[in-house]
Image 1 (tube, rainbow, N blue to C red):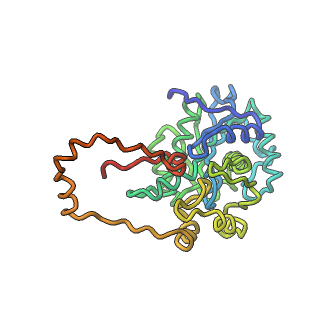
Image 2 (image 1 turned 90 degrees about the vertical axis):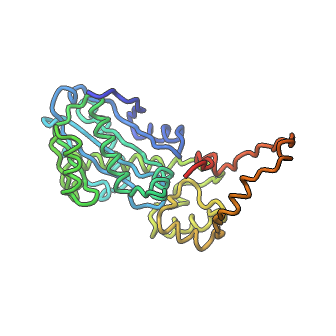
Length: 315
C-alpha cells in the first residue's frame, strides 16, 4: 500500500464552500470523504469523471467515487445519474445522500485551478487538457489506493480514444480491471456518482470564488463560464486589464479569451537582441567598478505575485 496523502475531509456540501474559501485559488485542491471501513475490507468498484472541462472560467474538477462491489445497488437507490442531466437542486440532493452513506460510499475530488490549466497549455512544450485530465485520474486512483481502498475494478468516462486511454491506464495499474468508455457517466452508476461529486464541488468553488484582483462579483455576474454564455462574454469584456489581461478565474488558453485579448488588450512586441548588443554588454567599463550607488529593489506587481511568476534566468 502507498503512503497516505493528507487531504481535507468533507462531510457535506457546505464544507466545500469553506474549504475553497480558505484555499489559494491559484493552486490545485484535493478534498475527500472519510473512507468507509468496508471499502478497506472488501473488493471495490471505482468510477472517474469530471466537471468543468469546457468552460473558460473556473477550475476543472476531477472526481472518483468508490464502494464495495457487494453494495453497488445502493447507487441506483440514490438515483445516481449523469450530473449534466440533473438540475442543480437534484445534484445537491443526491450528493447529500452520498455523504449520508458514510459506511458504504467514499469519494475524492481534485479541483485543478485555471492557472494550472493555462500554465500547462501555454508553455513552450505544450501540455494538453487531455494530459492534465489523465494525470488527475491517475493521481486520484493512487490516492484511493493510498487510503487503503481495495480497488478491484475502475470505470472511467473517456478522454480521447477509449481504447488507447484504457490501454494506458491498464499499463499503469496492471492489477486492476480497467474499463474506459464513452458516456460512462450515463452507463455506470459509480461513474455517475463521481460526476455528481465533481459537479457539486465545482459549483461550490465558483460560488465562493475570491477575486484577488479586487473585484466584488457573485457567480451570477460571471455566468456559467461556458464560452457561448452571453453573461460570461460580458464579464470577460468588462473585466480585462489592457496590460495584464483577465482575473485568475479565467483560462487564458481558451480561444474565447484569446480573441477578446487580441481585440481589447495592448499589443506587445518582443525585441530580440542581436549579437553586437550582447558583445557591448560584455565590454564592461572600468568606471563601473567604482559605482557605489545601489539600485532600489522594485516590488513586484500583484499580477506576478498572485501567479507566483519570477524572472526567467535561462532558456
